[in-house]
Amino acid sequence: MGGYSSEVNISLKSGNVVYKHLDKEKYNSFRVHILQDKWVALDDNHVEFEINKNNFSFSLHDKQITFDCVFNAIHGNPGENGMFLAYLELLNIPHTSAPFYQMALTFNKRDTLSVVKEYGIKTAISVYLNEGDAIDVDKIIAKVGLPCFIKPNNAGSSYGISKAYTKDDILLGISKAYKEDSSILIESFLDGTEVSVGVIEYKNAIKVLPMTEIVSENDFFDYEAKYEGRSQEITPARISNEERKKIEEAAKKVYKVLNISGFSRSEYILVNGEPHFLEVNTVPGLTEASILPQQAKAAGISLPDLFDNAIQSALNKE
Picture 1: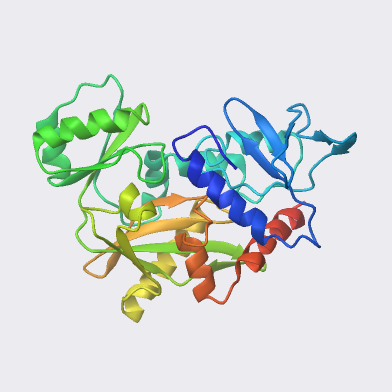
Picture 2: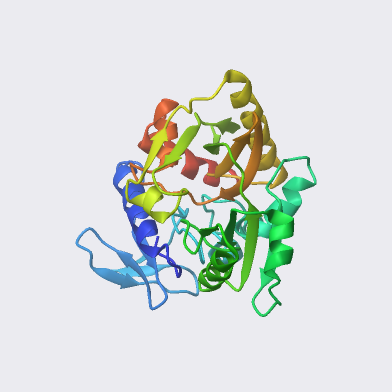
């Protein structure tokens, strides 16, 4: 848990929830903080033990602790973009996420969209910019229209996202997004019902969890709406059976096409009954209030069962 991005505190919350719900009789578990200034394991008294990066182990009172499996609860860099997982894979340590390449791909919004579009998945119209590119606002508006969304290409938890209604808004939004990432995405506004869909590997099968309808009190599902209660999250979503089936089909297809394993939560907008894919999170929030645990609960899956299943799936891949 932890990480090097703006999402560090959310990750620490997720990691602590996982730790709390793991079966202590079955697993000898430790919280490991992966932070920019230190990698440390914590005991129950919050005493820190430095991680040896050569083999991802640590010394606990003269006993060498190595890990059979790593539960990845790092949102953002380096847990969700594949970097930390590539390191674990070099050391042959199983982990609960998808392989590092799939994680890197799905963390990049632009590249993810380019893959899913090839398989007939509907998406918003988009423009991509790299820092230093010339900005032609009229050209952007001609392509995506107004209002539009401006997002960092590699970031989560709605950091750096803004909704633009005017030319000035676009310039301000671009400047805000560049603070999070050196490449950005500008997307057309999709007017419809927003639905969040958890797809997981559960008991060796791909399982689509009950969907959550997002009704934001703010202008869109931003950081405040996500984490400070400024939204209604309605599970199961108030959509027709036909719409639910269409989203289930699309969500399963995206999970397979992107070759994801472990946890995922994708966002879709229903426009005239047709699901449009926005993005996928491969390390979704795992606190009791987070969307994916809410969906698991609605499916009759407890947190201990959800987390245990992830570890068993990781171990069985070996």
